[in-house]
Structure formats: structure tokens, C-alpha cells
Image (cartoon, rainbow, N blue to C red; front, top):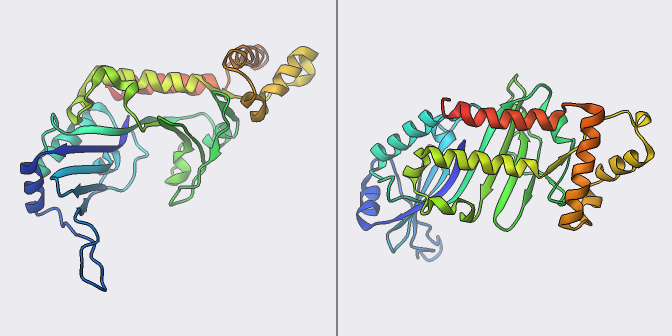
Length: 288
């Protein structure tokens, strides 16, 4: 469920202990010409986690808990509640961090689901999100295919995880990254320890499903079978630009009509399959 985090703790004793930690080799940027410090913050990395200590003794930590759990190698497998618990315990033991005091500022959560067909095929059928078109992802450090969209408070990514890591299964990754934590207001402050709160897991899975529900996905249907009025709505819905021009009210109206047509002539489609898989995976990760 949980992946990349940005978190911090403002505690001098913690900062000084990290400086002395044998697992961390802190460095400071220096101007090679003058020998002067470019900045006074110090940085160290360990197993995908990046530690930055500022002059104020504030410690900032960023990185993927999922990759950390897998020795920085990958994050294409499931990352269950038990795995998260082991990861937090390991970080606490190795670095002396108190999970109750480490506050999460940004968080990325999502699921890896096994689809019936190649994930790229499903991704190519995605039309828009809340009237906005997706962008082709160009941040892969290895072969990959996916789409994303960045808004003020969050970013959505949907991509072919099996292609990224050359896995034989059809693994589709659906995730949301929060730039602001307002949607988790009931859990503030969201600390590292609260990642072990079952209610937080349920809430994040609910947010993920609500986000997915706003996505328009088309399906191939035989247009010769449908009426002229239905065909007009179907063709309208397949164009991302058309959704951009609609008001929220009109978008809701056309979304319902568009999906009703697909349901009528296609039945259970890829959108339904993915939604069901997201829901099931949320419970599976909790061991339910």
C-alpha cells in the first residue's frame, strides 16, 4: 500500500545520533574553487532512504519504504501490513528513530494488481480524470509505459509495473501521491507509527477507489448495434478534449450515460475488473 514518503523530525538528540550512526556517511557540498560550503545541510543515503540534516537539527527523510524492504531492488511485489510493520521496526532499530515523532509530509500509496490482460492495453483505454487528460509518463529509469496527472494537492500514476521490471505477470500499478495531507485530516499528524493504523489503511484504499471512480475508461463495442443517440454519446466520450470542456454537472451527466452504454453493450469491462481488484487487494494487504 504505502511506498514513497517525505517525513521529518525536529530533534537535536536524533540528529546527533544519526551523525554518529555507522550506517550513514554524511557529506556536505563544497565549492571546489574556494573550499567554502555551498550549504550547511548534510546528506547521507542508505537502502533507498535519503537523510538530510539541517543546521536547525531538523532531519528530513525521503524514499520508498517498499523498495527499502526489498533491499532497494524493486517494488513490484505486494507490500503488506506485516511488511510495513517489519520495515518501520527495522528503521527504528537501525537509526534510533521514534515512529511516534517522525511526521509524514508527503505520502504515496497504491496497489499492484494482476490483470487479465497486458496492463498497457488497459492504460491505453483510459480517457480522462475529472475532465482532465493524462500525460504520458517520461520518468522511467528503465523500460516502462504509463500515464500520470499532477494537480495542486496530489498526483495520480497508472503504469505497467510488469514492463518496468520485466516480470511475466500482468502487473498494473495504480497509485496516488499526496503533496498536501488534507485528505488525511482525521489522522493528523500522520506519523510513521500511524502507518500501522488499520483505519488509515482503509481510508487510503477508499481514497484510491474514489480516485479511480473518477477515471473515464472506454471499451470496444460494436457501434453497429447501438442507436444514433448512444453512438453520439459513445464517440463523444472517447475524446479526452470533450471532457475538458464540460462543467462538473455536465461531466457527471455524460459520465453516467457513457458508462451505461458500455455496460449495456460490453457488460463487465476492464474498468470493473480493475476496480474490483483494487478493492480486494486493499483487504489482502491487511491479511483479511
